[in-house]
Image (cartoon, rainbow, N blue to C red; front, side, top):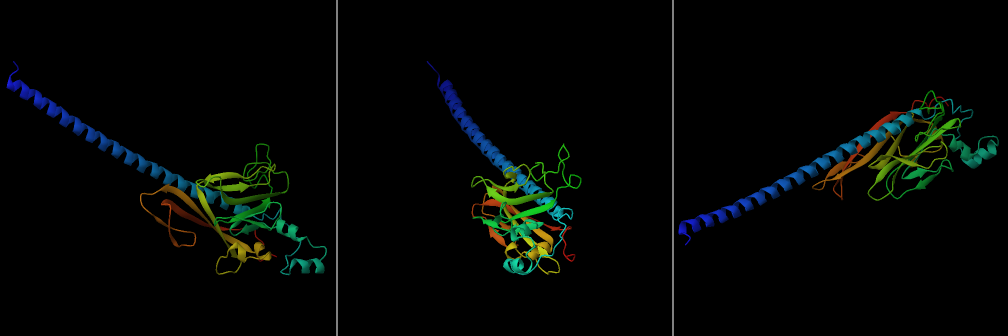
Length: 282
C-alpha cells in the first residue's frame, strides 16, 4: 500500500512541474516578444540609416552634374537669346537657330511636375506625382569629368559619349508603388534610363536667377531665363520604414506634413552654385 506521504510528495511534484512549465513558457514568450521588438526596432533603425544615406547620395549625384552644367567649351554662345517670341525671331532673324535647337543648347532645363523630353528639347512630359525633372548639359571633356577606361567621357550611367556634349536627365519614377527611385537618363550609347538611388520619393527644384531675391519654380521661367540661372535649390524626399505611430516631417517648402501611411520621410536640401552660367556675360 502506498503511504499518504508518498502520495502528497507526488502531488507536490506534479504541481511544481506544472508551475515551472507555465513560468518557463511565459518567460519564453516574453523573451520571444522582446527579441521580436528589438529585431523590429533594429530593422527600422537600419532602414532609417539607409534612407538617410540615400538622400545624401542623391544630392551628391545631382549636385555634381549641376556644377558642370554649361561648361563653356560645349556652349560657345555665338548668339544672344532673344526675349521675343519664336515666330518673331523667325521673321526678324531668319538665320538664327530654330526653337528646338535653341532649347537643345540650354545648359539647364527643368520641368515642374514633369520630365524633360529627350527627343523634343524644351518640352516636358507630365507625371502624376509631385516631383520635378531636370536636364544638365556640359562639354564631353574626359579631363574635366569622369572618363572611361578607354578615356572616353561618360554620362551619369557610365556610358561612353561620342559627341561633344553630355546631357543627363534626372527624375523620380516608381517601378512599383512601393519602390520610388531616382532615375537618370544619359546620352551615351542610347542606353535606357536606369535607377540610381532607391527610396527617393520626390525631387523638388527651385532656381535662382541673377539679381533675384527669391528662387522660382520651373513653370515661372521663360526660355532666356534658363541661361540666367546662378544657383539651384535641390531637395529630395526619402521614404523610410513604417513607424509605430503617425509621424510628421518638414517637406521641401518647410511645411509640416503628416505621413498618412506612417512612413518616416525626410527632406534633404542643398543649394548649388551654377558656376558656368553666362549671367552677366551675355
